[in-house]
Length: 294
Image 1 (cartoon, helix red, strand yellow):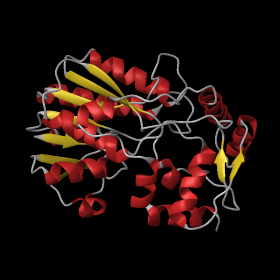
Image 2 (image 1 turned 60 degrees about the horizontal axis):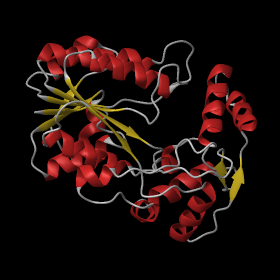
Image 3 (image 1 turned 135 degrees about the vertical axis):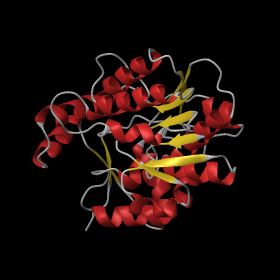
C-alpha cells in the first residue's frame, strides 16, 4: 500500500492519476476530505501539523510519497521541517519500508529557504533507518500557472534571472518518476536531479506562451532588488524577501540551467517540453494570466 501526501497539489494530482491508471493499491492523505472528492481514490484525513493524525493514516502502508508545501514567509525555522519530520517519525513507527521524498535541486546545509529546509529533512530521513529516494527537481513549469507575481500588471512575463535559462520540468514528469520508484524496486538510497529537456530563458518561455495563448506575451526584467522591494510592499517579511532575491541572483549564475537524463532513465521516455506542457495546460495558463492582469 502506498500513501500519497500532497495529493491535491501540482505533483500529487498527477501521481494519483498514474497510480489509479495502474490499479496500484494506494490512498491519499488529505487535510480536507471534501476538497479531495475529485481525486477519485481512497483518502484518509490527516495533517502534518497534527502528528497524532498521521499514525492511523500510515496503517498498512509500505511505501510513502513525501511531499509538502514549499518555503513559507515566516521568521525562524521553516514549517516544512517540523511537518516532514513528523511524517517520517509516523512512517517509521508504522513499519513503512520506503520513502520517496520530493526535495529541491541544490538542497544544502545553510541554503536559503527551501534549500536549507529540504536539506535538513533529507538528513533526518537518511538517519531514520527507512529506505529512501530523493527527487530533486528544477523549477516547475506549473509555476507559470500558480506562481504569484509571474506576470506584470500589463501581462508581461517577469524575468528575475537576467536572461539566464532554467531547465524547467513539468510536474507530470516528477509524478511519473515517483510512480516508477513507488511501484518498482528503488534499490539503495539514491538522489535523482530531475529537469526538463532543455534550459529556457524567460524570453523563450514568453514565446512559447504566446504560441499557445494566441496573443503576444512580452518579457520584462525584474532585478533582484526590485523583486525584494515588491515582496516587501506586499507585506512579506524583509528577511523572506531578501532570501528570495538572493536565490534569484543564484539562478542568474546558471544555477538551474543544466539538464539531466534522470526522467528518461526512471520512466523510459524523455521529459515533456515546455510546448507540450503549455498545450496541455492552455486554459489554466490563460486563466492565470487573466487573473494577474485583472
